[in-house]
Image 1 (cartoon, chains in turn blue, purple):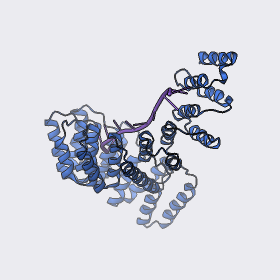
Image 2 (cartoon, rainbow, N blue to C red):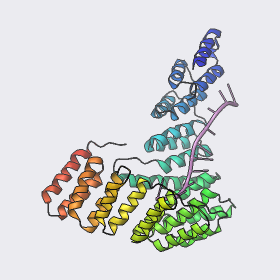
Image 3 (cartoon, rainbow, N blue to C red):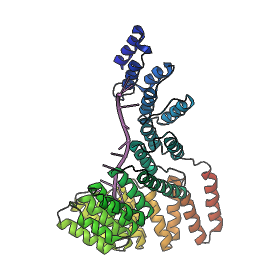
Image 4 (cartoon, rainbow, N blue to C red):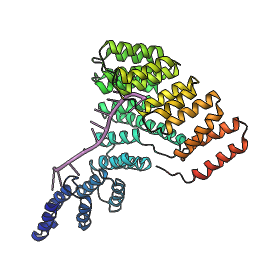
Length: 411
DNA sequence: GTAGGGTTAG
Protein backbone atom coordinates (compact mmCIF):
# COMPACT_ATOMS: atom_id res chain seq x y z
CA UNK A 1 0.00 0.00 0.00
CA UNK A 2 2.84 2.36 0.86
CA UNK A 3 4.41 1.62 -2.51
CA UNK A 4 1.19 2.43 -4.30
CA UNK A 5 0.98 5.81 -2.58
CA UNK A 6 4.58 6.51 -3.53
CA UNK A 7 3.91 5.66 -7.15
CA UNK A 8 0.82 7.83 -7.09
CA UNK A 9 2.86 10.75 -5.74
CA UNK A 10 5.52 10.22 -8.39
CA UNK A 11 2.90 10.24 -11.14
CA UNK A 12 1.86 13.67 -9.92
CA UNK A 13 5.43 14.98 -9.81
CA UNK A 14 6.32 13.74 -13.27
CA UNK A 15 3.06 14.81 -14.84
CA UNK A 16 2.33 11.18 -15.75
CA UNK A 17 -0.95 11.50 -13.87
CA UNK A 18 -2.43 12.55 -17.19
CA UNK A 19 -1.24 9.35 -18.87
CA UNK A 20 -4.09 6.86 -19.07
CA UNK A 21 -1.70 3.94 -19.32
CA UNK A 22 0.15 4.81 -16.12
CA UNK A 23 -3.05 5.58 -14.22
CA UNK A 24 -4.61 2.31 -15.41
CA UNK A 25 -1.69 0.36 -14.02
CA UNK A 26 -1.92 2.22 -10.74
CA UNK A 27 -5.63 1.45 -10.48
CA UNK A 28 -5.16 -2.21 -11.32
CA UNK A 29 -2.60 -2.63 -8.54
CA UNK A 30 -4.67 -0.61 -6.08
CA UNK A 31 -7.63 -2.98 -6.26
CA UNK A 32 -5.44 -5.95 -5.42
CA UNK A 33 -6.76 -7.45 -2.19
CA UNK A 34 -3.22 -8.38 -1.08
CA UNK A 35 -1.42 -5.08 -1.11
CA UNK A 36 -3.92 -2.54 -2.38
CA UNK A 37 -6.95 -0.76 -1.02
CA UNK A 38 -10.23 -0.34 -2.78
CA UNK A 39 -10.91 2.91 -0.97
CA UNK A 40 -7.65 4.30 -2.23
CA UNK A 41 -8.35 3.06 -5.75
CA UNK A 42 -11.66 4.87 -5.60
CA UNK A 43 -9.93 8.10 -4.60
CA UNK A 44 -7.60 7.80 -7.57
CA UNK A 45 -10.51 6.90 -9.84
CA UNK A 46 -12.63 9.86 -8.72
CA UNK A 47 -9.83 12.25 -9.66
CA UNK A 48 -9.80 11.07 -13.25
CA UNK A 49 -11.82 13.43 -15.40
CA UNK A 50 -12.72 10.99 -18.17
CA UNK A 51 -12.03 7.40 -17.17
CA UNK A 52 -11.68 4.98 -20.09
CA UNK A 53 -13.39 1.60 -20.34
CA UNK A 54 -10.44 -0.23 -18.82
CA UNK A 55 -10.58 2.02 -15.75
CA UNK A 56 -14.32 1.57 -15.29
CA UNK A 57 -13.91 -2.19 -15.68
CA UNK A 58 -11.06 -2.26 -13.18
CA UNK A 59 -13.14 -0.50 -10.54
CA UNK A 60 -16.15 -2.74 -11.20
CA UNK A 61 -13.90 -5.78 -10.97
CA UNK A 62 -12.49 -4.52 -7.65
CA UNK A 63 -15.93 -4.04 -6.11
CA UNK A 64 -17.32 -7.29 -7.50
CA UNK A 65 -14.76 -9.25 -5.49
CA UNK A 66 -15.04 -7.05 -2.40
CA UNK A 67 -17.45 -7.17 0.52
CA UNK A 68 -19.49 -4.39 -1.07
CA UNK A 69 -20.40 -5.84 -4.48
CA UNK A 70 -23.41 -3.50 -4.69
CA UNK A 71 -20.91 -0.69 -5.35
CA UNK A 72 -20.04 -2.47 -8.61
CA UNK A 73 -23.66 -2.11 -9.73
CA UNK A 74 -23.77 1.56 -8.71
CA UNK A 75 -20.57 2.18 -10.63
CA UNK A 76 -22.05 0.50 -13.68
CA UNK A 77 -25.02 2.82 -13.39
CA UNK A 78 -22.64 5.80 -13.36
CA UNK A 79 -20.83 4.31 -16.32
CA UNK A 80 -24.12 4.31 -18.23
CA UNK A 81 -24.83 7.90 -17.18
CA UNK A 82 -21.41 8.96 -18.50
CA UNK A 83 -22.10 7.06 -21.73
CA UNK A 84 -18.78 5.27 -21.26
CA UNK A 85 -18.55 2.44 -23.79
CA UNK A 86 -18.58 -1.24 -22.69
CA UNK A 87 -16.35 -3.96 -23.88
CA UNK A 88 -16.39 -7.74 -23.51
CA UNK A 89 -14.77 -7.55 -20.07
CA UNK A 90 -17.42 -5.37 -18.47
CA UNK A 91 -20.15 -8.00 -18.14
CA UNK A 92 -18.40 -10.93 -16.43
CA UNK A 93 -17.21 -8.57 -13.64
CA UNK A 94 -20.63 -7.07 -13.27
CA UNK A 95 -22.40 -10.42 -13.25
CA UNK A 96 -19.98 -11.69 -10.64
CA UNK A 97 -21.33 -8.94 -8.38
CA UNK A 98 -24.90 -9.90 -9.29
CA UNK A 99 -24.24 -13.50 -8.41
CA UNK A 100 -22.94 -12.73 -4.91
CA UNK A 101 -25.88 -10.37 -4.39
CA UNK A 102 -28.40 -12.74 -5.97
CA UNK A 103 -29.60 -9.66 -7.82
CA UNK A 104 -32.01 -11.18 -10.29
CA UNK A 105 -33.69 -7.97 -11.46
CA UNK A 106 -30.36 -6.29 -12.17
CA UNK A 107 -29.19 -9.41 -13.96
CA UNK A 108 -32.20 -9.27 -16.24
CA UNK A 109 -31.46 -5.63 -17.07
CA UNK A 110 -27.82 -6.41 -17.71
CA UNK A 111 -28.92 -9.32 -19.90
CA UNK A 112 -30.81 -6.82 -22.02
CA UNK A 113 -27.75 -4.55 -22.21
CA UNK A 114 -25.59 -7.46 -23.28
CA UNK A 115 -27.92 -8.16 -26.18
CA UNK A 116 -28.30 -4.46 -27.04
CA UNK A 117 -24.57 -3.74 -27.04
CA UNK A 118 -23.85 -6.73 -29.23
CA UNK A 119 -22.16 -9.02 -26.71
CA UNK A 120 -24.86 -11.66 -26.87
CA UNK A 121 -22.44 -14.04 -28.57
CA UNK A 122 -19.64 -13.62 -26.08
CA UNK A 123 -19.04 -16.94 -24.34
CA UNK A 124 -17.82 -15.25 -21.14
CA UNK A 125 -20.84 -12.98 -20.89
CA UNK A 126 -23.37 -15.73 -21.65
CA UNK A 127 -21.76 -18.23 -19.29
CA UNK A 128 -21.74 -15.63 -16.54
CA UNK A 129 -25.42 -15.00 -17.22
CA UNK A 130 -26.16 -18.72 -17.12
CA UNK A 131 -24.41 -18.91 -13.79
CA UNK A 132 -26.33 -16.05 -12.17
CA UNK A 133 -29.63 -17.41 -13.41
CA UNK A 134 -28.68 -20.80 -12.05
CA UNK A 135 -27.88 -19.60 -8.53
CA UNK A 136 -29.93 -16.50 -7.74
CA UNK A 137 -33.34 -16.46 -6.15
CA UNK A 138 -33.31 -15.13 -2.58
CA UNK A 139 -36.72 -13.88 -1.57
CA UNK A 140 -38.66 -13.81 1.59
CA UNK A 141 -41.15 -16.60 1.25
CA UNK A 142 -40.50 -20.18 0.31
CA UNK A 143 -43.30 -20.05 -2.22
CA UNK A 144 -41.84 -17.10 -4.07
CA UNK A 145 -38.42 -18.66 -3.77
CA UNK A 146 -39.70 -21.75 -5.48
CA UNK A 147 -41.20 -19.73 -8.31
CA UNK A 148 -38.00 -17.78 -8.72
CA UNK A 149 -35.97 -20.96 -8.73
CA UNK A 150 -38.07 -22.27 -11.57
CA UNK A 151 -37.83 -18.93 -13.34
CA UNK A 152 -34.05 -18.84 -13.24
CA UNK A 153 -33.84 -22.41 -14.50
CA UNK A 154 -36.17 -21.59 -17.35
CA UNK A 155 -34.03 -18.54 -18.14
CA UNK A 156 -30.90 -20.69 -18.10
CA UNK A 157 -32.47 -23.20 -20.48
CA UNK A 158 -33.74 -20.49 -22.83
CA UNK A 159 -30.32 -18.92 -22.85
CA UNK A 160 -28.81 -22.29 -23.70
CA UNK A 161 -31.17 -22.60 -26.67
CA UNK A 162 -30.28 -19.06 -27.76
CA UNK A 163 -26.62 -19.99 -27.63
CA UNK A 164 -27.20 -22.92 -29.95
CA UNK A 165 -29.37 -20.95 -32.35
CA UNK A 166 -26.75 -18.20 -32.48
CA UNK A 167 -24.12 -20.79 -33.28
CA UNK A 168 -22.22 -20.40 -30.02
CA UNK A 169 -20.72 -23.72 -29.02
CA UNK A 170 -21.53 -24.50 -25.39
CA UNK A 171 -18.60 -25.79 -23.37
CA UNK A 172 -18.87 -28.35 -20.57
CA UNK A 173 -19.76 -25.73 -18.00
CA UNK A 174 -22.69 -24.44 -20.03
CA UNK A 175 -23.84 -28.03 -20.51
CA UNK A 176 -23.57 -28.72 -16.78
CA UNK A 177 -25.53 -25.61 -15.85
CA UNK A 178 -28.24 -26.38 -18.41
CA UNK A 179 -28.52 -30.00 -17.32
CA UNK A 180 -28.87 -28.99 -13.68
CA UNK A 181 -31.61 -26.59 -14.74
CA UNK A 182 -33.37 -29.58 -16.34
CA UNK A 183 -32.87 -31.54 -13.13
CA UNK A 184 -34.48 -28.78 -11.02
CA UNK A 185 -37.35 -28.38 -13.45
CA UNK A 186 -37.87 -32.08 -13.99
CA UNK A 187 -37.53 -31.26 -17.68
CA UNK A 188 -36.81 -34.75 -18.96
CA UNK A 189 -37.31 -34.01 -22.66
CA UNK A 190 -34.90 -31.08 -22.65
CA UNK A 191 -32.43 -33.11 -20.59
CA UNK A 192 -32.61 -35.97 -23.08
CA UNK A 193 -32.12 -33.51 -25.88
CA UNK A 194 -28.95 -32.09 -24.30
CA UNK A 195 -27.72 -35.63 -23.65
CA UNK A 196 -28.25 -36.41 -27.35
CA UNK A 197 -26.40 -33.21 -28.26
CA UNK A 198 -23.46 -34.36 -26.12
CA UNK A 199 -23.44 -37.78 -27.78
CA UNK A 200 -23.79 -36.38 -31.30
CA UNK A 201 -20.92 -33.95 -30.91
CA UNK A 202 -18.66 -36.53 -29.31
CA UNK A 203 -18.28 -34.38 -26.19
CA UNK A 204 -16.31 -36.25 -23.56
CA UNK A 205 -18.35 -36.96 -20.45
CA UNK A 206 -16.06 -35.93 -17.62
CA UNK A 207 -16.83 -36.67 -13.99
CA UNK A 208 -18.91 -33.57 -13.37
CA UNK A 209 -20.91 -33.97 -16.57
CA UNK A 210 -21.41 -37.66 -15.70
CA UNK A 211 -22.76 -36.81 -12.26
CA UNK A 212 -25.07 -34.14 -13.54
CA UNK A 213 -26.44 -36.44 -16.26
CA UNK A 214 -27.18 -39.16 -13.71
CA UNK A 215 -28.69 -36.55 -11.42
CA UNK A 216 -30.84 -35.12 -14.21
CA UNK A 217 -32.29 -38.55 -15.08
CA UNK A 218 -32.58 -39.35 -11.38
CA UNK A 219 -34.48 -36.17 -10.52
CA UNK A 220 -36.70 -36.60 -13.57
CA UNK A 221 -37.52 -40.13 -12.46
CA UNK A 222 -35.95 -42.01 -15.37
CA UNK A 223 -33.87 -44.40 -13.27
CA UNK A 224 -33.38 -46.78 -16.16
CA UNK A 225 -31.52 -44.15 -18.15
CA UNK A 226 -29.72 -42.93 -15.00
CA UNK A 227 -28.38 -46.47 -14.50
CA UNK A 228 -27.45 -46.66 -18.18
CA UNK A 229 -25.33 -43.51 -17.91
CA UNK A 230 -23.88 -44.71 -14.60
CA UNK A 231 -22.77 -48.10 -15.93
CA UNK A 232 -21.28 -46.61 -19.08
CA UNK A 233 -19.01 -44.22 -17.16
CA UNK A 234 -15.31 -44.90 -17.41
CA UNK A 235 -14.73 -44.31 -13.71
CA UNK A 236 -17.18 -44.52 -10.87
CA UNK A 237 -16.13 -42.77 -7.68
CA UNK A 238 -17.92 -41.69 -4.52
CA UNK A 239 -19.89 -38.88 -6.15
CA UNK A 240 -21.13 -41.06 -9.06
CA UNK A 241 -22.31 -43.79 -6.67
CA UNK A 242 -23.87 -41.22 -4.37
CA UNK A 243 -25.76 -39.60 -7.25
CA UNK A 244 -27.29 -42.85 -8.45
CA UNK A 245 -28.15 -43.93 -4.88
CA UNK A 246 -29.80 -40.58 -4.31
CA UNK A 247 -31.86 -41.06 -7.47
CA UNK A 248 -33.40 -44.22 -6.06
CA UNK A 249 -33.67 -42.64 -2.61
CA UNK A 250 -35.80 -39.69 -3.70
CA UNK A 251 -38.19 -41.99 -5.53
CA UNK A 252 -38.83 -44.15 -2.50
CA UNK A 253 -36.91 -47.11 -3.90
CA UNK A 254 -35.07 -47.73 -0.65
CA UNK A 255 -34.24 -51.38 -1.30
CA UNK A 256 -32.53 -50.54 -4.59
CA UNK A 257 -30.62 -47.69 -2.95
CA UNK A 258 -29.40 -49.95 -0.15
CA UNK A 259 -28.50 -52.64 -2.65
CA UNK A 260 -26.38 -50.15 -4.56
CA UNK A 261 -24.74 -49.11 -1.32
CA UNK A 262 -23.68 -52.74 -0.76
CA UNK A 263 -22.31 -52.90 -4.30
CA UNK A 264 -20.47 -49.63 -3.72
CA UNK A 265 -18.76 -51.11 -0.69
CA UNK A 266 -17.88 -54.26 -2.64
CA UNK A 267 -16.33 -52.08 -5.34
CA UNK A 268 -14.11 -50.58 -2.66
CA UNK A 269 -15.53 -47.06 -2.99
CA UNK A 270 -15.71 -45.20 0.31
CA UNK A 271 -18.98 -43.45 1.16
CA UNK A 272 -18.83 -39.92 2.51
CA UNK A 273 -21.24 -37.65 4.40
CA UNK A 274 -23.27 -36.93 1.29
CA UNK A 275 -23.63 -40.64 0.54
CA UNK A 276 -25.15 -41.11 3.97
CA UNK A 277 -27.62 -38.28 3.46
CA UNK A 278 -28.82 -40.18 0.39
CA UNK A 279 -28.89 -43.50 2.26
CA UNK A 280 -30.83 -42.09 5.21
CA UNK A 281 -33.26 -40.39 2.82
CA UNK A 282 -33.73 -43.75 1.11
CA UNK A 283 -34.60 -45.43 4.42
CA UNK A 284 -36.96 -42.55 5.37
CA UNK A 285 -39.40 -42.87 2.27
CA UNK A 286 -39.32 -46.41 2.14
CA UNK A 287 -40.02 -46.83 5.85
CA UNK A 288 -36.85 -48.84 6.53
CA UNK A 289 -36.49 -47.76 10.15
CA UNK A 290 -34.12 -50.47 11.37
CA UNK A 291 -31.88 -50.14 8.33
CA UNK A 292 -31.79 -46.39 8.81
CA UNK A 293 -30.87 -46.73 12.47
CA UNK A 294 -28.07 -49.19 11.79
CA UNK A 295 -26.77 -47.10 8.87
CA UNK A 296 -26.73 -44.01 11.04
CA UNK A 297 -24.84 -45.92 13.73
CA UNK A 298 -22.36 -47.32 11.22
CA UNK A 299 -21.38 -43.81 10.15
CA UNK A 300 -19.34 -43.39 13.33
CA UNK A 301 -18.52 -47.01 14.18
CA UNK A 302 -17.57 -48.32 10.74
CA UNK A 303 -16.86 -45.35 8.48
CA UNK A 304 -15.55 -42.88 11.08
CA UNK A 305 -17.75 -40.08 9.79
CA UNK A 306 -19.24 -37.52 12.17
CA UNK A 307 -22.92 -37.04 11.38
CA UNK A 308 -23.82 -33.45 10.54
CA UNK A 309 -27.02 -31.60 11.39
CA UNK A 310 -28.47 -32.81 8.05
CA UNK A 311 -27.96 -36.42 9.06
CA UNK A 312 -29.68 -35.85 12.37
CA UNK A 313 -32.44 -34.17 10.37
CA UNK A 314 -32.82 -37.29 8.22
CA UNK A 315 -33.00 -39.44 11.36
CA UNK A 316 -35.63 -37.22 12.96
CA UNK A 317 -37.61 -37.44 9.75
CA UNK A 318 -37.18 -41.21 9.62
CA UNK A 319 -38.20 -41.78 13.24
CA UNK A 320 -40.98 -39.20 13.04
CA UNK A 321 -42.57 -40.70 9.95
CA UNK A 322 -42.44 -44.10 11.61
CA UNK A 323 -44.40 -42.64 14.51
CA UNK A 324 -41.49 -42.85 16.94
CA UNK A 325 -41.94 -39.24 17.98
CA UNK A 326 -40.53 -39.45 21.46
CA UNK A 327 -37.46 -41.24 20.15
CA UNK A 328 -37.03 -38.46 17.59
CA UNK A 329 -37.40 -35.78 20.26
CA UNK A 330 -34.94 -37.66 22.43
CA UNK A 331 -32.42 -37.76 19.58
CA UNK A 332 -32.70 -33.98 19.11
CA UNK A 333 -32.22 -33.31 22.79
CA UNK A 334 -29.21 -35.59 23.08
CA UNK A 335 -27.43 -34.70 19.88
CA UNK A 336 -24.03 -33.02 20.17
CA UNK A 337 -25.03 -30.26 17.71
CA UNK A 338 -27.31 -27.31 18.27
CA UNK A 339 -30.70 -28.17 16.78
CA UNK A 340 -31.79 -25.79 14.04
CA UNK A 341 -35.14 -24.87 12.57
CA UNK A 342 -34.95 -27.63 9.95
CA UNK A 343 -34.64 -30.31 12.65
CA UNK A 344 -37.59 -29.01 14.67
CA UNK A 345 -39.46 -28.54 11.42
CA UNK A 346 -38.99 -32.22 10.55
CA UNK A 347 -40.37 -33.18 13.96
CA UNK A 348 -43.28 -30.76 13.68
CA UNK A 349 -44.14 -32.24 10.32
CA UNK A 350 -44.13 -35.72 11.82
CA UNK A 351 -46.35 -34.56 14.71
CA UNK A 352 -48.83 -33.23 12.18
CA UNK A 353 -48.83 -36.39 10.06
CA UNK A 354 -49.18 -38.62 13.12
CA UNK A 355 -51.72 -36.40 14.81
CA UNK A 356 -49.67 -35.77 17.96
CA UNK A 357 -51.13 -32.36 18.61
CA UNK A 358 -49.75 -31.74 22.09
CA UNK A 359 -46.14 -32.35 21.09
CA UNK A 360 -46.78 -30.44 17.87
CA UNK A 361 -47.82 -27.35 19.80
CA UNK A 362 -44.66 -27.47 21.91
CA UNK A 363 -42.44 -27.84 18.86
CA UNK A 364 -44.38 -25.19 16.96
CA UNK A 365 -43.73 -22.68 19.75
CA UNK A 366 -40.00 -23.44 19.74
CA UNK A 367 -39.97 -22.96 15.98
CA UNK A 368 -41.65 -19.57 16.05
CA UNK A 369 -38.97 -18.41 18.45
CA UNK A 370 -35.99 -19.53 16.41
CA UNK A 371 -37.44 -18.89 12.96
CA UNK A 372 -39.91 -15.99 13.28
CA UNK A 373 -39.60 -14.93 9.64
CA UNK A 374 -40.81 -18.23 8.21
CA UNK A 375 -44.49 -17.98 7.36
CA UNK A 376 -44.94 -21.72 6.86
CA UNK A 377 -44.22 -22.41 10.54
CA UNK A 378 -47.11 -20.23 11.63
CA UNK A 379 -49.48 -21.93 9.27
CA UNK A 380 -48.34 -25.31 10.53
CA UNK A 381 -48.90 -24.36 14.16
CA UNK A 382 -52.22 -22.70 13.38
CA UNK A 383 -53.41 -25.88 11.67
CA UNK A 384 -52.41 -27.95 14.67
CA UNK A 385 -54.36 -25.64 16.99
CA UNK A 386 -57.32 -25.79 14.64
CA UNK A 387 -57.18 -29.58 14.53
CA UNK A 388 -57.17 -29.61 18.34
CA UNK A 389 -60.31 -27.49 18.27
CA UNK A 390 -58.49 -24.43 19.65
CA UNK A 391 -59.80 -21.97 17.13
CA UNK A 392 -58.93 -18.89 19.11
CA UNK A 393 -55.30 -20.03 19.40
CA UNK A 394 -55.21 -20.69 15.67
CA UNK A 395 -56.46 -17.18 14.98
CA UNK A 396 -53.88 -15.78 17.39
CA UNK A 397 -51.00 -17.53 15.60
CA UNK A 398 -52.24 -16.36 12.23
CA UNK A 399 -52.46 -12.75 13.39
CA UNK A 400 -48.93 -13.04 14.80
CA UNK A 401 -47.82 -14.15 11.38
CA UNK A 402 -49.57 -11.23 9.74
CA UNK A 403 -47.92 -8.72 12.08
CA UNK A 404 -44.48 -10.17 11.72
CA UNK A 405 -44.58 -10.76 8.00
CA UNK A 406 -44.49 -6.99 7.48
CA UNK A 407 -41.19 -6.90 9.29
CA UNK A 408 -39.58 -9.63 7.27
CA UNK A 409 -37.70 -8.27 4.35
CA UNK A 410 -35.76 -9.48 1.39
CA UNK A 411 -32.60 -11.29 2.40
C1' DG B 1 -3.21 -2.82 -25.33
C1' DT B 2 -3.72 -3.62 -20.26
C1' DA B 3 -8.08 -7.67 -17.46
C1' DG B 4 -12.00 -12.21 -17.47
C1' DG B 5 -16.56 -16.03 -16.48
C1' DG B 6 -18.47 -20.83 -15.27
C1' DT B 7 -18.48 -27.00 -12.42
C1' DT B 8 -21.07 -32.25 -9.92
C1' DA B 9 -23.80 -35.78 -5.56
C1' DG B 10 -27.11 -33.58 0.10
